[in-house]
Image (cartoon, rainbow, N blue to C red; front, side, top):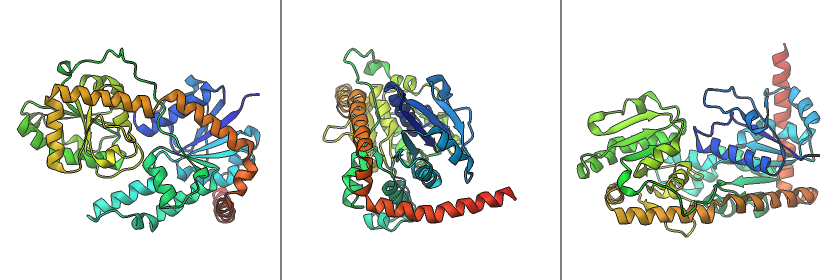
Amino acid sequence: MKQHVFIIGSVWVEPNSSAAGSRMLQLIQSFLSQDWQVTFGTVSQKNPNSIDLTNYGVTEVSLALNNSSFDEYMLNLNPTIVVFDRFITEEQFGWRVAETCPNALRVLDTEDLHCLRKTRQGAIKNKIEFTNDMLLNSEIAKREIAAIYRCDISLIISTFEMKLLQEVFKLDESLVYHLPFFLSKIKKNNSWKPFHERHHFVSIGNFLHAPNVDATIQLKKYSWKLIREKIPSAEIHIYGAYPTEQILQFNNKQEGFYVHGFVEDAAEVLENSRVLLAPLRFGAGIKGKLTSAMKCGIPSVTTSIGSEGMCGELPWNGFIEDDLEKFVVKAVELYTNKEVWKQAQQHGIEIINTIYDKEVLENKFFRVLQEISLNLEQHRNNNFTGKMLLHHSLQSTKYMSKWIEEKNRK
C-alpha cells in the first residue's frame, strides 16, 4: 500500500507566480518521485494562474474552515504525513489533524519565516534599525514559533533562518530541518546565450509580496536614474504577477523603464537578459528570482537581505551591495565588463550545483522523515513544549472553531 501525504495549502499552487508556488510544486514532485500518493487541499479559490495538480497525478480537494466535515474527511483519508503550507494553515487545521490522525507525522513548511519578514518590514516603515528584540516581542513570532513547536518537524528554507531559530529562539535542532529549493544540476554544456547576445537589466517578482513592491520603488526612485546616467541606452524590464496600479504607472519608455506584469515563461526572459537587479530592503527565506537567475546564467546585483542564507561560503554570482551608490556602480560594472560577468556566471553554477542539488537534498529529506516516523512517540516526548502548546491549542482554538461552526448552522 502506498504511503500517503496530505498537503494543506494556503492557496492553490502557482509555480509561475511566486517562489513559494514553485517550492510547493517541487515538494509535491518529490513525494511523487518516491511513489507516494499525494492529496492537496486548500480553502482558497482557484484563479487563472493556479495549475491543475491532477495533471501530475495529485488528488485535489476544496476545504472548509471551522467545519467538522474536515474531521470526517481526515478519518477516511488517514494520511501518513500531513504538510502544513505556512504556519497559518497549521493554526487553522493542526488541532483537527492531531485529533483525527494522531499517528500522522505533522510537517510545517514555513516557506520563509513570516515573523522575520514582517518585523523587518515594520522596521523599514518606521525608519528604525531591526533588532532581534523586536522579533522576540512581535505577536506574529509568538504564533509562528508556537506552530513550529506543535509540529513534528518544520522545513526551513534558509541557513540564516536555521541559525536564527536555534540561537535566538532556542529551538532544538530536532524540530527544524534545512531544506532549500530542489534544483537540477547545471551541466557544463548548457547552451546559454553569451554576454554580447544578452541585453537589458531585468527585475522579477510577485507583487503580492511586499519586498518586491518596495524593491521596484527603490529602482524607480533612486537606482535607475543613476544607472541611466552611466549607460544612457540601458533599459530595465520589470516582470511579476499581480502588479499594483502604482507599479504599472512606473512604465516609462523615455526612461527605459518597462513594466510588463505577469510572464508565463520567466526562464525565457532571464536567458535573454544580461543582469538581474534585486535591491531588496527587507524579506526572509531564499529568493526564487535569484536562484532562477543562476539557473538561466544571468548574474545579479542584490543586497545582503537578498542573498541571505543562499550561498554559504561560496562567492555570489555577481555583487552584494547595501549602499545605493555602490549598488549602482556594481550594476554598471557587471553590465559592461564581460570578464567580470562571465566569472559571476560561473559562481552561480557553483552555488546551484553545491547547495541546491535536487538528488542529494531529496535523499536526505526522505531519510529524515523515515527516521522521525519510526520513532514518533519518543520524538514527541522529547518536545514537551510542543505537547503543551498543542494541548492549549486544542482547548482554545478547538472550542472557538466549534462555536463558529454552530453559529454558522443557525
